Length: 262
Length: 168
Image (tube, rainbow over all chains, first blue to last red; front, top):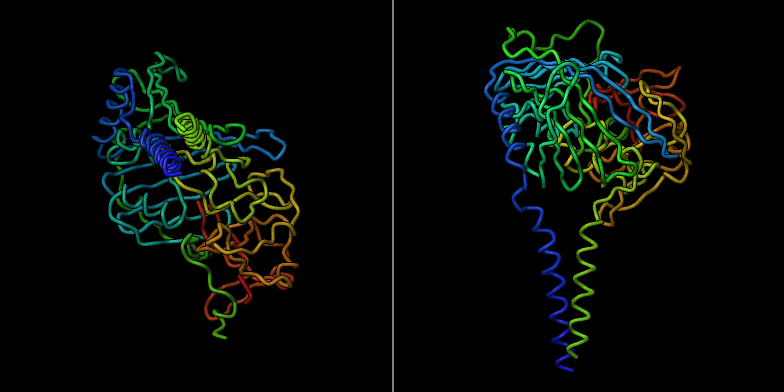
């Protein structure tokens, strides 16, 4: 009987060890081919070294219907960045029609279609602001990966493997095509092989979701030294617009009873 | 005895590995919570429109798929669902969400709402207000009223959302 208990105990220990081993493998150093690592680092360093930059994005993403049919939507976005703490974004398309202002103190999002805007005090760096928006309001700045102070760190934090696919085209630009795998995502990036190591295309495959929808961004019209006035990042509400709150994932809205003081 | 031990250990190890490799798969469509926005939807993976490697690998979104046949404002997704089956109350500790709406109030909700998971409760919201709504100001807060249902405007992920205000 004692032996049997010992055996069962050891089996449980083996199970826990197995789970720990399996879980721990996520934290193993990523296996990135040197060439892929080199170009990802080069792009990240290049972006991190820019004081001001702007680019345009044409994005496409799948929405999988209940019957499995994939429907693709698209948006156009324009982003202007002044490191370390200013961003202006302009979005227009199938699911977006808004302006985004970050002036180092506050973020304002203006929904041009519904004529509403929300303003919120946020941290004083782009990295901290993006995380704050995500944590409190479940809001993601598109292509945030290219806005962080250390893009390489953000890109590789969950990477398991990285491969250099080859020299491929995005439009007329020759690019280093890299492919990465993570536990929940696969993603590919095309980095300009010319003098400016800027990203030209990003594809994310949500491989753990049913039917594996994709997000694709074509990134063009890079300006790596634009003159950006401080006024660009400050929101001035036009006449006839309404101020509302951001939807806070941690806070429940007031009920009518509470609002009416009943 | 030795056989039992090795057999059990191998089985348990195999199960542990299997659990780890399959656990994160999302059963939902379109990166959402399962085609209905049920209470468990708060644990779904990020939707495909999240154009960021960093944030796409993160936790669940607040918003789930629309329920009913009403169209999304700018992207008319084609979805159907049974409204009543989505009116679910549970407790966050059991993996579900509290329902802030009374049954009588909920009966007036029009189709096409989306569940939003806020602070442990499951709220409902729309991309648009119904035609013919009235504007009502209570204690300095602007609400929109139609068919006995109060809505309040919020900004979520770059778009205006009209959340149904609880009446209790």
